[in-house]
Image 1 (cartoon, one colour):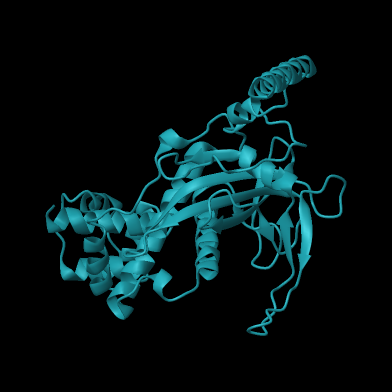
Image 2: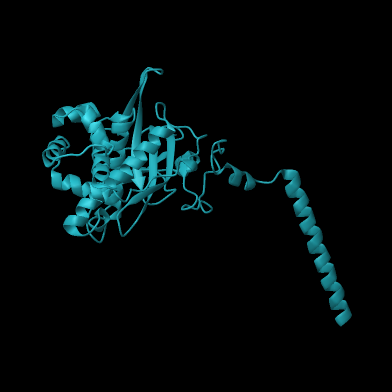
Amino acid sequence: MDAKTTIGRAIRILRDSAGLSQEKLAENANITYQYLSALENGKENFSIGILESIAAALSSDVVSLVATAYQFEDQPPKINPAFFNRGAPLPPGLAFEDLEVALNETHKVIRLINATLMKVGRRPLSGFIQRNNLSGIVSNILCDSFSRLTHYKHNHDQRYPDLICKDRKLGREIGLEVKSTIRPGKGGESHNGHSGWHVVACFELNESTGDILFVHVMFANLIGYGKPDADWSYVGSKVNKVTGSQRTETYTTTPRGTAKLRHGTVYLDTEKVGTKRWRTSPELEPPTFSPFQRRLTKLQPRPLEVETKILSLRSKKQAASVKTKNVADHERR
């Protein structure tokens, strides 16, 4: 790929990530949007001065812009839309196309962070921090991707929920709490245990490059702690006896709440995630859209008449075995 195409594509990616239209970026860089469009498509030459203007409009500089352009030669991971469970419900105002864009955007931002850290510290982000902190950063970036690219917008840094969508049809606001984890199938964990929609996005980590790839995504509308049939249990704030540090107050999903999340699987990369050992709550009837419904159906208790027949056959078999043993003992005597 030639330099014009490589740098043009990087400008387009950075512009999209910044949430800028071609018209707005062109205005900020003091060029026409027609010229910017041609640049992004690799059809126009550019001067250092033009690159400086565009880089400044993107809150960057020429060196970083060019370095980022060649970092994009190797595309960041993307989810496979074929693994979507399109029968599963999403929160009102969110479409599968929105989810795909937000997940892939998070891959891209993590790639950009790692590119910078590799140049400065020779390690990706995962080489600097603990896994639980990495999951927190991925959650924040995913939350921001939703806010920039979907109808779900930031609520407040310290308030529940993370995101709000104003649903005009329902005449109310729909909230969405966002969490990520490196452990597929893991239940929910929160600092509040409130009611509402929750998403748990599970990712795979490439240890050498620091890239992430989302492999399992669950949505569920959970019942808050303290309410009838609550989906949250209170864990409290425990002190680590070794380090002396104390965790913030935490709530985790009950077996029923975890089952709701697992039944609400909207994306499952079956080439990377196995679910045979996952459990669900017997209290919860598997919905028709659950990817585990077929497996759970096989595990349902047998009808009483079938169970009785099986027990009868076992009794007859045991009786025949005892009779054979008695005959053999008599012949030996």
